[in-house]
Amino acid sequence: MLIFRPLATILLSLALASCFVPSASGAEVRLLPGTATDYHAWIVFLSQGPIRWTSKPPSTPGQEPESFGRAYRVVQLRSEIYDTVLIEEITMGNEGFGKKVKAVRQVDLDGFVKSFGFVGEIAGFTFVRCESPTSFRFRFKGREFSVDGLDGSRLRVDEITASNPALQPPPSGAAERQRYAHCGRSNVRRAHVHGVAAIPAGR
Image (cartoon, rainbow, N blue to C red; front, side, top):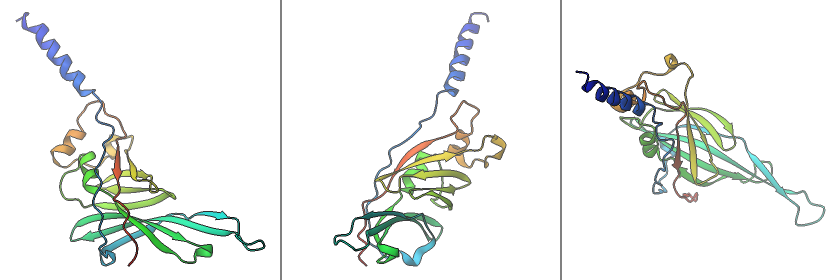
């Protein structure tokens, strides 16, 4: 019996050590193909962030400087129970004149749910609030995330978790139960979620 005790101790030590291996901190998510389909009939939520203004000297002396504004809108679409999230880039001139949608990109929610271990349908997106001209918060199936980089080609997504495990939503599915295993894990998981190529706004 004593012969097998060192082996059992080694196996137990390896099992415990594997619990403290940190999980993957990020993932590269593929770009989705663009579409020019008119999606306005499926909009269930829209929120515009703060406008960033820039100006340039007038082309003719004595005239007012030319101002240009840019903002981003988070647009949620729903077909049956499935969510789609778009990022619209809005531009405008002096005092908001000539406001238009310059481009639209689609958040790769399929890549997002795979990066963070969700299971089931791609449904359950809830916008929380804008945090800056290029960032916002949202919830997905009870877990909260922050997003930054609306002005870039990819989004940085960070999960925001409560410090008290009792405040966490109950896991669902095998992938979710694995996430709550009693092992040393980071409180923040990060992934890079790409948007699609710009969709022409001419419609």
